[in-house]
Image (cartoon, rainbow, N blue to C red):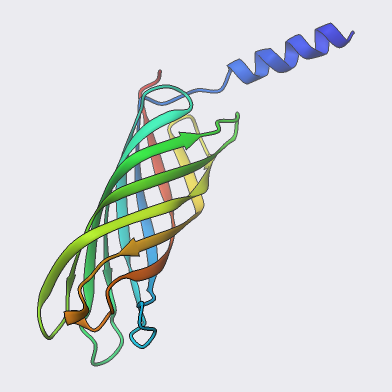
Length: 174
């Protein structure tokens, strides 16, 4: 009896599908904490990503995000472009994951203008399957470090938090 139950559990685990590519569109909230603790900003915006799955557990991600601080009198905007590995823990109805992404950030402020520097993000989230081709992402939470220069008033680096939620389109299969 135990052998039959174990075989059934193994067969269920094999039914987990792995898409070849996943495309995500997210609402993103970014809270910027400066290293000198006197210049904090919160930005609302969006991010999108493409993940190419090499196998059921490992994928490569390209993530582009844009954020704007729309508080009256502040015209800060930022764009991140991050790339790196994602480790997926696939189950039949949901997929938790962790990722580490590296790349850059560009920020625009009314004065002194545009600055570009290194950025990285590390964290994870979970996707819930709605159909074989669509998943919902209720949470992706990441530590994001940016190194915008002190000329913008942020200090030498920023320890940020990024929350994202959205929809994932699953294309093809492995």
